[in-house]
Image (cartoon, rainbow, N blue to C red; front, side):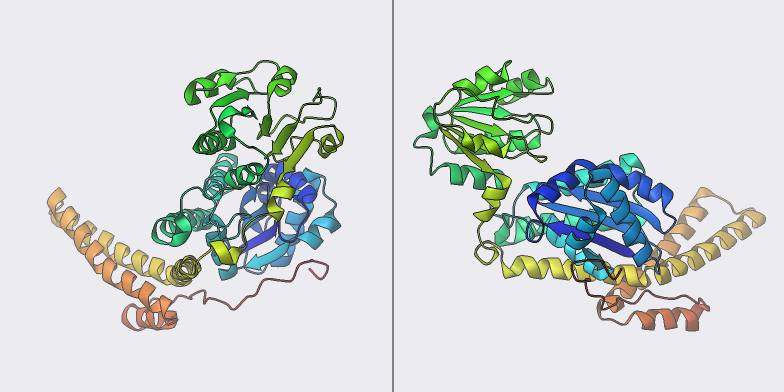
Length: 416
């Protein structure tokens, strides 16, 4: 069974999301290793959302939810009660639809943004590295990525340039008269920094430099043609615009000197800049919380086609999952018959490679048609017909996981 605990910018404070983004991903390994009911976990924690996707025993939703809340609370320093009141719990087919929509950018601050699909992919890669994925979660996340690509290429939501970075620069443009003569310092060398460089150059910025807290400035500067700064304080003093997007630097009020007018854009999560810097003369701050308040309304950026595509893809995935046990049982039956025939051929002395190849090809042909038909029936809600057919024709008894009408629980887990 699939379960998802989710909180995002629409219903949760950025302070809480910031804490979760810092510590929650580290908790997945312990959760899977120490909780019998949880067989797999992928945690997605970004600047505007927290998601814990779980593969659990069918009757263990409450236990898995409680264990996840406790594990994430300990790892992030968020009070358990606060996390319980922030997350919404989704289950079964609701999880599929939600992840497909998230990966396609339909639930982002900037609807249709480019970065989220990469963040989802990196969350899966981290889970693989930590050994916390399961076959069910692998299939779910891989199909979500495929759906995202289809949405971006086949619908109007795939317009180039939608991103949190570009929204931030759009807001900043009301403060910057001419980007071509503005000195811009980028603090950080990750994916957001690369996106920032491209977005700045699209706006005509040419005087770009980079400072790397991790020491990767030389490589990043060479790759993107930027001057490299060694002294952060001096670099900030020389800059008109400072853009932070790193995981390790916090700029406080004592770090910025001088009274010149400067615009600071904080894209970091956790926060890179102390909000108190706005008390300094000449300093204006755009952070994620401020940027999100100016995000375009979904109705103006999303399209009905994108929502429909996500819904169709989720329905197909759910249908395939529901009939999968029956298809697996059918495959096992046919392959068992194949092995018996191969053994008979060997007994007769007819064990040539050509004979085996021919029989395996025949088995593949026999499996293909019924497997496709099973998925077609499942899409129509007729899974049981396939199961009944297996029982009648082959004596194969199996069950299907019929798609439920499960609705997401309301925000707050006091009753869980």
